[in-house]
Image 1 (spheres, rainbow, N blue to C red):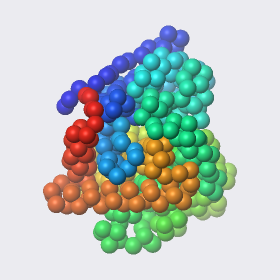
Image 2 (image 1 turned 45 degrees about the vertical axis):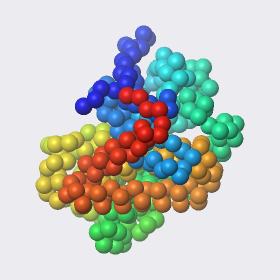
Image 3 (image 1 turned 60 degrees about the horizontal axis):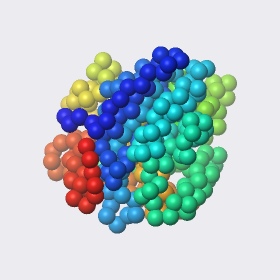
Image 4 (image 1 turned 60 degrees about the vertical axis):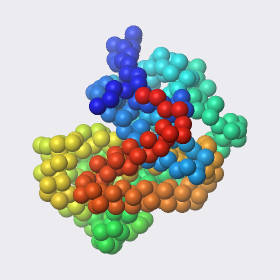
Length: 392
């Protein structure tokens, strides 16, 4: 496997905690990838995520769009975001990474961090913006920045548009797979691990499409109701980390162990929290027909092989959770405006076309959706390299 363009480890002089930056590839001199903060984050993890970002970007290449996909990168900090010193650590990390962010790394929220927090810390670290490296590629920087700021100010039923577009993309990916399989939405049962930004939005869009969310897991455990959970009530009762206030649960809702979502009697599992959630030791508990990777790298490769042997299909992260990243750039480059209906329509149309193409490729090649996604991504990376300056 080809080594990334840049890989570095930073050690905080105050706490001794480590942070990482991996740039897998540059396109037109810029790479894109969020910054995550979690206890136990490693360089290998960030390297895999950066490689995945290269693929996510390339999969959305459309020669008709103003948005030209960037290269892939990722940042990570080994710290619990709930730690009292986490914010100061974030500021110090961003200050250390400032030359890279100013030059070629565009970043934003990821696991453990909100965009508001990243923006505040970036300003304190002396940065103009966490995505300022892309500004020289814009035709009208002022108009583009204003359009993105306006889009971030949009709320739909109490949740920011920036949170919702990713879940819209995940939901549309699953709906496309259901349509291809001839499975009706009504009666399709879902369990979601994580009710944060991605998991919460995904649960909302699936419930509104007519699917039944019967289990949701957060750090306190699994909440379940075979008759279906009230997703909107759960979203209203969660804190900034996606943890649901148990005092608000209606009668009949059961509280189960933290990993009970895995064995829930459902058709679809949506891991939307941490990486490496499904491994060879726990995959045999899963009876769902589909696993939809709303999180990054939640299914380990060996586990996916075992799941496939049992007839379980994994819809891969590089495809299904790519909507948030793409929405940023569609908005900034001017393919869409700061409007929720336009954003959702564009996301649904783009994600449906991409998932249809990947699933058709998997069927034609007799392979997995992940292998097909990487084949499609490799084709599009080659097309990007023919037209634009790319470095690895």
